[in-house]
Length: 477
Image (cartoon, rainbow, N blue to C red; front, side):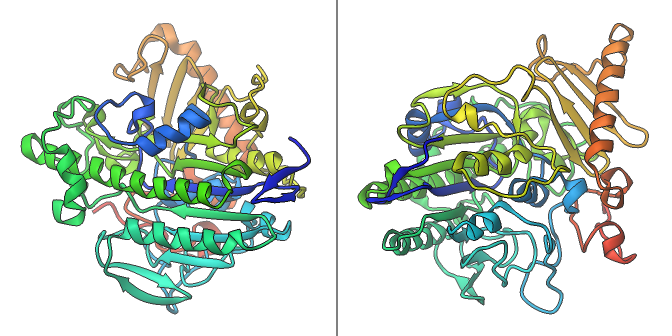
């Protein structure tokens, strides 16, 4: 990267960073990715002015583990968060700082002179305490909930937000930007929306946005028979119930997109656009009837690893460096993000050899991918693990299965499980070996997910030996 870029009318070695993260947004749910029904003009604008990745995968198809992996560069079997954090988030004596002692990239940026702020969802424990180098801290007390009267924290004090929470997060982000613009130091601002996570009831969202989908046929998500593994507790339905759920989901996405538009406009008004690396992604994907599933990885039991659960949007804009209007189809993962960001920014830090990620910063400058890298991604959700190449996906469920094998070249929709095809035994064996070798190399034995009874119903305390024998995961029922 260049050694100097302009940052907010001042010459500085490092660009600012605005990192926007959605909650439960599938890669399929944007206009720029081909969905002709959903209204996302501002996300489409970012893609048109920068680069869109078509194969960016979360490290785990549920929120807290995926967010922890983005932040630390570690897989769940290294950072110890294996499920969404059910307990330990809210202020009080029971709060748990799950990532204590683990260095995230925001802590590295803060040590390098960045002013770091967060507006929105944290959901990595002890929400009342600013962590990982953040100085400015406006967060959700838990991880999700109602869009009106959301439980939030301002300056460490809990309160109930009467406004639509998407708007509240946006407005706080704009205030942070106002403050940062007047400072000499480069800044990092995380804007973590709770949208478009459920609830999707009509009274939970602005009527002015909901009405846009009143007559939408939702052909972008064809109705399918319910998957036999679908869990009852996830919102799902047929007919008018299905239409209402999709209306709520699409509305939440569009309302978030409106907020993102305000952030883009503020960057332009403040003369920060050209000097700010802007990134948009989601924690995990989402099925809204895809494969007959409603939910992400834990929309089913056993948990699933369909691309609609594990593939997320990833948009990057930095005028003059990231080529405009480009699409990159390299296979990259959330655990690649930390090394990529620090590499791109030119931030020196002591690399941890145990981290599995590889920097894909050259791709952001329009350079071709190394043919020997970025060709395989791995995912885990407790004892469910996946290896995915361009041609194949193999899902292994420890200890007994069921396992899945998909020929992605012939079956990109993952409709036919070829695990019992005798002609593919060699493919299955090779993928199994690669999968096991990778996790043996990177997993911490004390936190290895294959030994964790993860149900998808939430994590209660620290996992592994750090939990001192306490029950770490909620029961299935």
